[in-house]
Image 1: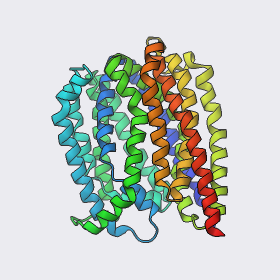
Image 2: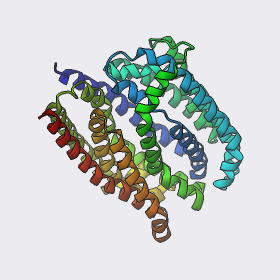
Image 3: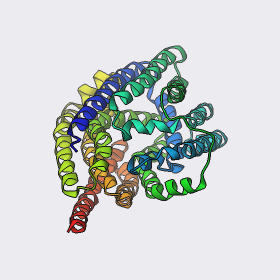
Image 4: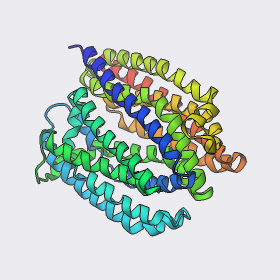
Length: 412
């Protein structure tokens, strides 16, 4: 059976969603950056940073396991929903109670109430119907496009309106909160099957056993994605954090979109053809080449025209972000190649390999960032992020080649 047509449709629909939302995200950022100052972005960044930290460190890997597992998996939905509710409630309470300690750690008293307000987001997300994963599992990319686009438009619209009314970081959390509420409602109204209040310990053990390496990988990935933010927020303050996070978002999101789109589409396809090892590897190589050809021109724009891009998006008051933007363009290129390789490794059930790759990138970042910041200031953090990502390409190449040779040996 050929999945070329499904892959093509998936790339078109997911590409349309990611492209549309990223263009609108940049437009939203351009509007918001002319109302809020870097320090306010930094306060918001602290809230999102901590929320992501708690979500990643309690991740179970349920969604990936549901896609990766062949056969009928509908019986796991109710158990997954109960786990999600408990997890969301736990994160919400922990974030609310730890808010004073977190604001003290970052020396940002203004973050206290914002952190407590943010604690509502994981509480609402916990009740979302886990069946949304079947959009991707069953290659229903058009349906997912309509679903995700609706949520994004609500989030973006509420954010912009709230920023111009409140003129504070609370407006940005209002956008997150509204998006979570809309997704909660839609997931139970238009997504099937609906979960029940049922819990099966055996099914939970199966999910946790399959997802344990994904959980550990997610922790290392979080540290790699946000270790620089934690150090910057602690050492250089919320103003520098606001500049760095905004630069990071603009530089890496457009560049990694090709990798994200292709990996999101190809992962379920790779799983479906995983019994044919030669076909799987050939499909991976085609995806990798396509990613590189799509990403390179975009990354080059950030390297060549950083000042012009900063003026266009943020305005002249944000020119300190230009050299950071220039360096992080390289980061987006390497990240997109790694993301594509993750889909292949997951299809080969090599979650452990991904954990090792992310761990190597994380330790490289964490060991290099403080010395580099000491020598180069905020730009040093960008150098550390690029170094960690580039070093990660080495084990990625090794494990892909090892997976190919192992698969070929198994066939023989």
